[in-house]
Length: 368
Image (tube, rainbow, N blue to C red):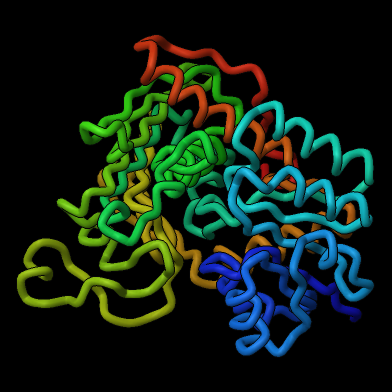
């Protein structure tokens, strides 16, 4: 089976994660790296041994590149997507898709006009345990879905941050950089068609988003809540068996931690982004690093997801399916819809009002 060459635009943390995923893929391979920073290009050449480019246009023009992964700053996503599409190359864009809905629409149009696949990922909705929860919603085992709750406590603001990292106008800040993950997960579990958002952001005197809280309404009276705080006052990994968003055991099972929550110390796990729990008419479910705990009729059972792809491997699997002509979930339109919810959260926080949504799309039939 022939492989597809993937070019990475932006040699940062996300670019390295994609490169690691490509190294373990039978369908895709690393075919080049682009970065406007000379030092980054030197590091990419030394770390990968592949050809490096000074700009996305040059990477996209390479005959060895079939797909461009755009991991450049959000404000540059639209021109990067246009450059790749113009060369007939498929695109994976980091989230958020763009900084504005109009730019997101133009990105979708560029891909449509060129007849190329545009995916937005990898978000935490790609993880196998989240897909287990979605399946519980679809098969109706626990009755109709009533609500979903996503909560995350991290030290995001204690990590090195530039002024640009915190600027929502540049597609950054906590809501767009981190909240997009929670929004994507909640939209996926609840079917995609968010009807409205009510929320608030809270932070320091300089207006920095230290955290946010949001309520998302879905058809049928289903409601979802998202809460995120990035000040490091508490760590959600104590509630997720010591496993964090990279799929590693980040909290040692010390006696003190074990008394707080029983933490396993080995085994294959999926990344988790804080806690995720759902309430159904006839029970409930709690996502774990290995699947989901299901509560029904007084019993607790576990649905395992240990043999299913998560994260970057799941993203590449969806790309392969899309290239073979199958419907994808995380399309450009899906990314636009997630961006709409995030921007509506900003608007609700600013106005104190519920904000209706108009560009939502459902989970594709292939996932139902």
